[in-house]
Image (spheres, helix red, strand yellow):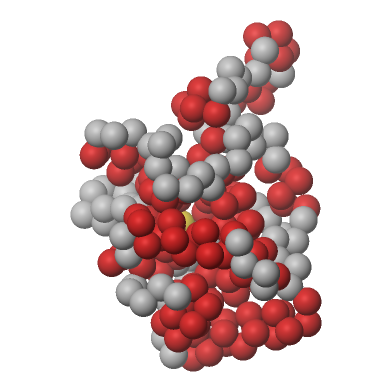
Length: 211
């Protein structure tokens, strides 16, 4: 299985919030806008999911989603096991909670972005959740809850290696925001080989104590 991880990404989040995720050109922008509009008209879930628990909606939810829809959550539930196959816990419950927490941090990160980046990501997610474009551009035939980790990995590889800018930039957006959410979480620092901030910085900067 391919590695879609970008190690030591904990310092990237401020830069991500200032940059456009998708630089698709006029044709790609028109396609994304058309897909997003069509998806909304045909009933795709694009409103924030609200207070549900990612991965297992039967559990008691304490986090309220501000950006990701239920369809977006299902998308990340399918993709994260392929992105972080070697880094996720092997024990089933710990694995579920690691995925759920990462999805919640993806939502938190997007909620802090400016409107332009949020609009770009909404169009990308709509493209992947709208069945006709998911099949045509991602070559994923099943809804995301039914997609295997192997098929999710194959999709990511296709977009990573694509010569079509829209698809390649979509891959970068998906993996970059996911990597920041996963490896930027303090309990996961050791997985990327990051030992954490030096002791003097922790003692001197109050934000480390408030994190």
